[in-house]
Image 1 (cartoon, rainbow, N blue to C red):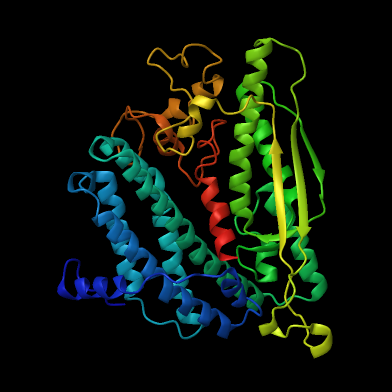
Image 2: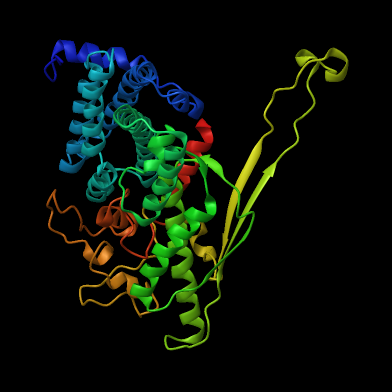
Length: 441
């Protein structure tokens, strides 16, 4: 497709025209409808929706970054991110319409490139703000990163949903299956998803729900994440607490597995670390006393519907109006540990990007004032704060002296930040994932 040259009159007009189109709410039901049923016609509709919606969201990110103070915007990391957003906006805003399966294939490749190019946006931005922190108030930085993370979640979710539907349609077209075969593939997909052998879960493809699992099992996700964090804690501390799961363990709910996996992993990392460190603080590093288990409770409730209003038919029994409303239901996962809780002096800082309880490693190679301050996780060379080298290299983005959560994000990356027991703070980023899907459901 033809794209106007950067900074040209045509480019400025395109930019201005899309700024006048605010992003629209994207209900989960809308994205799922394109796969129910999944057909060549529905995939074209999905592509048209994505092609209309993503440029609106990308141009908002461009405007937000262009509004930063000049000296901040000149930072090479922030400038690199801005240029990537400008390029992605231009490519999508000028992409040809999708009219059939073949043109959708080309469009999907463009989306795959977009997801790949923006995979490290948050770590790159974090490095930029780490270097530019003196030029902006902490509140302004937090506000900007809040918007960047929310926007990134939405853009990736919309793009990856269409990519998954496209791949699903291709598999179905090449390999039509019977009902029994679909059931078998679904089981294979769940197994591969647990073991990590498949980058694209087979069960999601077969059922044509894209990246959404309509029957996501909390207990399966908890077991998957617990297994990973348990191994991480054993490798870090040499000991790990047991996990007890109770409640409505057979419950399922529609959700994006990769989102809940990320959220659960970050919370469990905090719980495991706090439990071990609190135990060592109270009983010593060489204590043989058992650790207190982490307790996880799954609950599910369906609430009664309120009575119909007079405008809906008042008395259903006398009017014969059929109440087709779906009662609201809620699923909750409660994670409890005996890690000592949050220090009262830290409560006002727990949602600040510049705050983390993970201690930095000093130049002498020791973590904090003692082993218990920061714990041995701070000594990990891979992924943690200790791995941040002040090289200034774009390819090896790390370092700096600002510390805090910036260092955590820069050192290991947001979307793949699972290499250290020290999490990304007290649920700061995971909370955006849960709020986002709650908002669009």
